[in-house]
Length: 506
Image 1 (cartoon, rainbow, N blue to C red):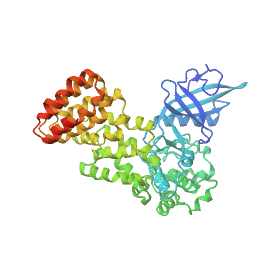
Image 2 (cartoon, rainbow, N blue to C red):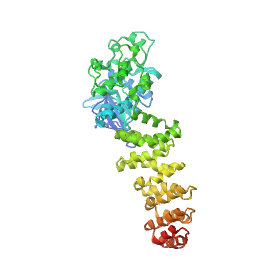
Image 3 (cartoon, rainbow, N blue to C red):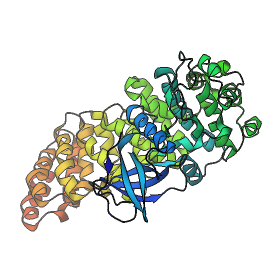
Image 4 (tube, helix red, strand yellow):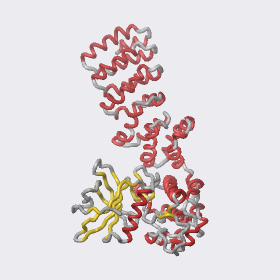
């Protein structure tokens, strides 16, 4: 049982003294009697979601069911189930009365119904996104039913929330219980809170409280029905008002219709197992689902598969919903590059996606990955970074360039690859303006001095030209000391005519 916190102060919803989170504005909708608030950590301000359930009596049946939901959410972990962070129960003043309130803190999420309206997708893009979401919820339900032998009992639109990366997650665990197939005793605890579920969401056997039939059915029978209800609500664009509406299939996509009908079979034993829906449904075979699935298992793919995938990805990304690309695919791609599971062509895709972001978001969502990549030992990654430096170099902070980027880039000045030496040299047109005087005079000019006698005549020529271009970033003393020698003694004595011409013209 929860510890009651009686030390509260009056105020807006954030009056719990020991509660480490600030409770913000509520969302317009939530499952059952819960209220879904926006929230933030008092420690670092990071966003969270806070669900609250209040009652005048701590033993009220809604409160008892709520505690079951807290216990279940805390103990059941899966990538497609809402991530639990914290919970507590408190006595909160409500005028002259005292309310008993349960709080659950989770990762920040938005009710699915709200997110659908916000995204406002249509046509193929809508169906592809719904397919991805249904794929995730089906995996969560399959995990509960097949792996844990648990029954959620309440799968519907209101029991699904959406993360900041637009992933769908299952929650609302108040009804959840073990699948008790062997206990024939009347009044056993299986689904003891099923009275919370609206009649429109219940299959016939649950409506009739036919527990004998329920126990003889597979563990997924009730939740498969719930998946059918969720599908209907998604594509009809509204909450299910009565069970009979499930027969209206006009809005269900044709590729999903056979599976929809199997989920809603009137015979419980014939209802489709959610695992079969995941593996076999034609509806899930689309560009968005296939792209995300490939990216999530990049480390299992060979170099040929990765190379082919990333060369096609720019065109595919153009066809996918822009917000999903930026909030879902881009973070996955950035992570894959940072941890080495993505090939060099992925950097081109990252920069293309990043170009669709506002400047401030580009700086927070893309640049940190790029800065880390400069430390990579993968020559292909280093070459790609230098080839595209004009796309992001201006966005790099001077201190970041001086302290984190240049020390890694500078290794290319003495690389055995003439291509890498050449690209490193050219990158200084972008990076040199951001370097400190100490770095320019202490490191950069020493490297350029060596490149003026490089074995490649083109590199010698371009080094002289570069020195002229970056001379304005040197102090007077450095210019006088370095440039006269570079343009006369070295350039004019070069055996390569263009190198001598560069010294004269510069």
